[in-house]
Length: 539
Picture 1 (cartoon, rainbow, N blue to C red):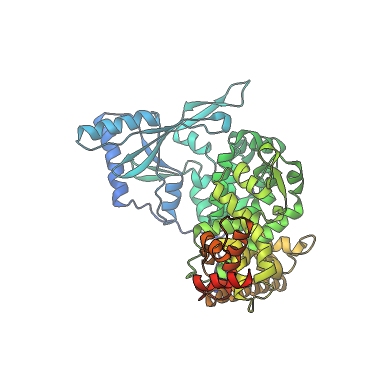
Picture 2 (picture 1 turned 30 degrees about the horizontal axis):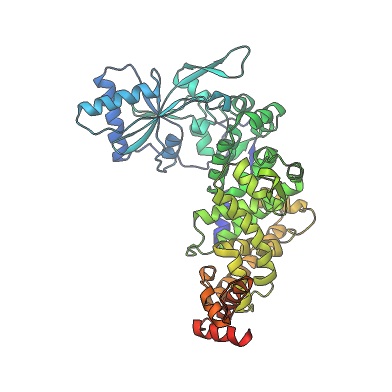
């Protein structure tokens, strides 16, 4: 309960703020404490080295750290994401000068990587990457873009820091730290105040910003969910714009979709992220696979179930003791992916050569381009939910060692994820309704927006689901069934053939081997010899 209260007080839930509420609006409650930028010793050593390069070659260039590093420093967080923005040079040109200088000083240098721009996919900047004094840097030039009359692809030009700031995704990411002058620069005049008051806002009108790079819709979602910030309401309107959604569908690579979604699933509140995707009406674009039955299944009610189960899964994670080592970062990602995609768990897509595959795996592998392991695990969690319901949850405190062992062997090491999700589906009110009720959808969007009685009913359901899950987990431990999916058969094919006095194998070998596993699940002290004798007696 304490964990949930802390999350609620931190502003869990989707919130919007009127576009007319300016960055200086004192009615907005302060959410973040802004502090002075303090560089670590290694960061300062790198910055000093870069300034030495400028002085050595008499370069007419101002060095600035851009974006996330500045944002995180201002709210007292450390960051290893150092992007150096240059006003008069390309990143690769400056990186070459850095290595030339370090070589002249007898310092070993590393190679320079170049990530090419791809404006067709709305990736406009060429980025040079290098390591300086064991710190990774990305180097880019400041940009100001113009558009040819017959093209939507921008023509990159060198720009001022102010030009560049207004071309960035969000005001809180448009801040600079001027290395030459050791000061923060806020050219939008909104970034610091938006950070302090917890507002996600675009430097330019959102529609302009999103048409420049439609992925910024997902970035706005990710940062709002990461920090628990309110979203400027005209961002929602722009994200729902037909032309913007068409650009999101066709201009952004699936790999970039996946990177943002994975960031959401690893963030502070994946449920907030899914709620914002629903509010922006972009779920069908994010999860698109070319199978019509799957496309048709992404409905308003499916979105509601996704949001509701995600929110309850977050609450459940809060209730599970932090000492539970099984719930690591990877398992949390799988839990949230499985919760988000649960409405589609019974569907199939058309795979290669017309082969039917789980739609959930198709979404993760192809719509999001995440790892095959992520796709296979989420799909397997869904398959395991029915086993959990039929065996473990049906007799939570009284299942037999044999029944539980056979179930766990099918479910494998992610059995806890399936068991927890199914327990939530079974015990949270409204979860099994044909249509998620309005109050359930409202709770999913923002748990603080519903009546106290509604919130109490939902959270009592979550607590009951977690208690059931913990009862099952304790019984599995008492029965020494942890990792029973790795249990090797007590007999081999040769043992069975000798017991049956036969010289050729066949289907009966597997049947007896499977039977021997059942025997040792019932009686873990049973020896190989005892299994052989039982085969002889029962054959």
